Each structure stands twice: as structure tokens, then as C-alpha cells.
Amino acid sequence: MLKRFVSYYKPHKKMLALDMSASFFISILGMVYPVVTNRMLNDYIPNKSYRAIIISGVILLVMYIARRMLRFFVQYQGHMIGVAMQSRMRRDLFFHLQKLPFSFFDNHETGKIMTRITSDLFEVAELAHHGPENILISSVMIILSFIYLMTINVFLTLIIFACVPVLFFVSVHLRRRLREAFDERRGSNAIINANIESSITGIRVTKAYTNSDAEMHKFADSDGLFVKANRKVYRAMARFFSTTQFITDVFNVIVLIAGGLFLYNEQISFGDYSTFIVSVNLFITPITTLINFTEQFQNGASGFKRFVEIMDEAAEQDAPDAVALENVEGVIDFINVSYSYGASKEVLHDINLHIEKGQKLALVGPSGGGKTTICHLLPRFYQQAEGEGTICIDGHDIRTLTMESIRRSIGIVQQDVFLFGGSVRDNILYGRPDATNEEIVEAAIKANIHEYIMSLPDGYDTEIGERGVKLSGGQKQRLSIARVFLKNPAILVLDEATSALDNTTEIFIQQALDELCKGRTTLVVAHRLSTIRSADEIAVVENGRVTERGTHEELIAKGGTYKELYSLQFREHEGA
Image (cartoon, rainbow, N blue to C red; front, top):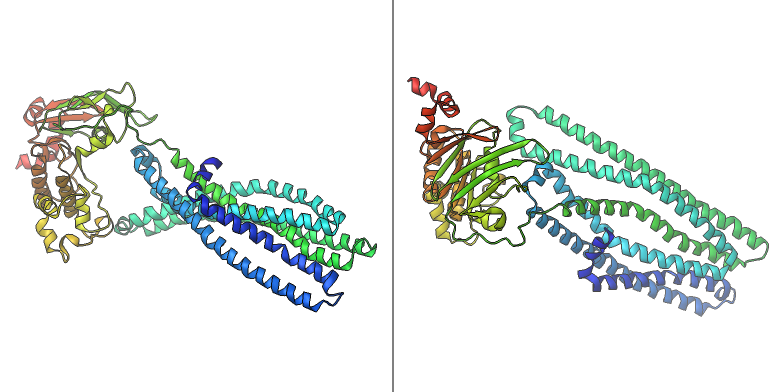
């Protein structure tokens, strides 16, 4: 994992080298003050060299001005390196998410994914910036200060140095609990984000069912987990930092006592002793910095671990010799098709269907029978395993075709229409981003929504709000139909496209859909059987199997499941 983290530094090698060089010189300049202090105490002041005192002060001031400029460079450019790395990781993660199969999103909540893209990667960026600098500056300071202290008094320095292993042993021991606590907090943070995302998205449902209290209880539960995880983190942090700080305080006590004894026995001069007291912090402070850096390291390491977890998820992949589907006619075959979602029970079993070019096949049957799964397998939203049959388009096994070319050839209209934040034009253009304005208008006219769009304040440039919240259900559906008209696919999938609409709106939508189906091979899932009476063939899907097939009249004559469903829906009408 370290190798993968370091790889993100590669585009910034030159700037990182400058940043590290600046950090190195900051460390060197940090040693000037104790050296000057020692000279003043042992030479300039006793010998009353006032000119040397003034010159030393001026040199020290110049050094600090240079150090200030170096610190500005390190703070600014170092952070920008971290931001650039964060940006690249975020892009990599977002691009990878676009390639992941439906199954990944079935098992991961949106809020948790968003946490990994935002707050987790922010912690990684902070580690990317501060990590190398803290390690370099602290390491150089420890080495230089140790050497300098040795020049003042070897035995006193060795006494201090002997205490360092104790500090590191204690910090390593306490850090384990700290790491576990940070991991738990990240998990609770993802849960609370997922809860917030779900509640805000469903706020209209919450208000409609007056379930605000229930949502507040759910939020309180997830917030309670967050508080509990933070309590564990801060308890571990308090134990860690209070203990390590106590040990560094003991260092100062040891220096004070041992140095006092050395001074009493005339083994060290007063000037050297004073300098040692001042300089010992140059040795202890970077050690403390490295220990305190543990918190940031744990945050960044946990965030990068969660980033890698998603990056290691298997993306959708074409077969090595996959070819593009071109000149699509639209002949579809399902041959002995079975399918299971992971280790769960079989959803489809031995499905055999054939749709000729330009024909319409309707799938009906009880909910949960497998109709939508059939629709999802055709564009390869879910991947079949070996031995689960074959799906062909124009005689080509879809596993031998590129997924992009398959999906480019299929237009999908679903019951739950998803519109993006933006304008009416933006959402229609999603069907084909390079379309002209004339083609957009033509698609809207065919979808029976052009007149409504022109009645809006800004026409096609009118903002529709998040997920099209400013539009009615019928208007959303017609926009999605216009999007498919613009795409102009050879194959059409209608997955309960009108089931959520009122009867009047359904008539207008059905007219648009009928226009859309002309000349296209169509696979339609419907619960309202009135919408599919004219289908070329109807297949009844129950418990993952095709139990009946035929035209409307043929299935009514058979007196099976289809007739029973039809009778239930139209009993009142037929009685009249």
C-alpha cells in the first residue's frame, strides 16, 4: 500500500524536492540560535565583545527572515502538492466508480461512498503534505541536535538519549489502540453521512407520512454511534498524548538534575549548562513532533486504506478480444439464460426468448418474478457467469461485444426517472452530447414536451432543480423519453415506464412511447396490461421462468396466468 501511496508523488517530484530542500534548510537554520547562545554565554558576554553581540543578533535576524520565507514556501507549495494528490486520487476514484458494476452500488450506500471521496481523501492529502516534511525536519533536527549536544557534554547527552527508547516503546504500544479507534470513527462517520443523505433525499416522503420523529430517531442512533466512536478515539488520544508528554517532561527533569550535579562537580561550565538547557528542546521537540504526527498518520493511513478498498473493487471489463457492435439490426435472443445475484437463490432459470428486428416483446407477471433482471442482463448491467446461458444481439454473444457499444445501441426508459441538476437542455442532451439545437427540439416534439418547455420562463435553459424536483412525474418521464429519442437507439427497453402515472398522463406518455417504439426492437415490462395488448408477443415470467408465451388473444384463450391478471385489472370494465 505504501508503494501505491508514493506513486501519487511522481508527477510532483521536482516541487517535492524543492519542498524537502526548503524543509532541510529550515532544520539547519534552527540550529543557529543555540550555537549563537553558546558563543554569547561563553565568549562574547564574558569578554564584553559588544560588536560581536550586535553582529550575532543581526545575523540571527537575517537567518530568521530567510527561515520565514522558507516556511512560507513549505506551507504553501507543500499544501498544494497535497491538494494536487488529493485531486488526482478523487478523479481516479470517481472514474473507477463509473466502471464498477451495478452489484457494487447495490451493496454500498451513497453516503458512505461520498465520505470516501471527500473527508477520507482530505485526511490523505494532509498526510501527503505534512508526512515527508515532519519526518525530514524532525529527523535532521534530532541528528544535528544530538551531535551538537554531544559537543557540549557527552555524558549528559547520553543520559537523555537513553530515555528515548522508553518514549518510543510506550508510543508504539499506545498507538495500536489509537489506530483501532480511528478506524471505528471513520466507519461511524460514513454511517452518519449515509443516514443524512438518505433522509434529505427522501424528505418529501418523510413529510408526506409525518415520520419526522422516526427519522430523528434513526439519526440519533447513528449520531450515537458517532459519539461513541469519538469517545473511544479521544480516550485513546488522551492516554497517548498525556503519557508521551509526561515522558518528555521527565526528560527536562533529568536534564535539570543531572546537569545541576555536573555543574556542582565542575564537569560542565555554567555557559555550557545554560546552552544545554536551551538546546535540549531542539532534541526533544522533533521527537515529540514525530510522536504527535501519529494522529495525522493514522487519519491519513485509514483514509488511504478505504480509498484502496474501492480502487481494488473489480471493474467491468470487456473480453480481451471483444469487438464493437455495429450496424445494429436489433434481433435479440435469450438462450437457456439463468442468473443468480451472488450466492443468493437463482433469479432466472432457463429463459428462452426471441425478438425479431422491430418487434415488441412484453414481459408480464407477478412482482419479483425476474422481469427487470432480464432487462438488466441485456445491456450487461449484471454479468453472467459461465454456464448461465447466452444472450445474443444480431447473432453475437453479448459477452464478445464491448459494453459501450451494446449500451450505445440500447435506450432505456424506467419507472423511476433520474434527471440531473441543470437545465432542460442539459438533460435532453444527455442522450447525445454532440446533438444540435434543432435535434434537441425535434426530440422534445416527438416526446410531446416541446410546448411545455417553451412555456417555461427560460425555455430549454430553465433549471429543473435537483433530480428534476420542479417537474411533475409526467414531465420528467417525457424528458427522459426525449433523451432516448435523441440517442436514437436500435433497441428499446421500457421498464414499467408508465406505472407511476395517472391515467390521463399515461395516455400522453403512451403516445410518445408508441412513437418511440416505431422501427425499434422493444422489450417492455408492464404491470398495466392495457399498455401492451398490441405487443407482437407477450411472455409471462413467474419465479424466474417463462410460463406462457403468445399474443394477447392467444394468452386470453389459454386461460392461464395472463388471463387471470387481465381479469383482475379489467373486471369492472368488462362487467360494465
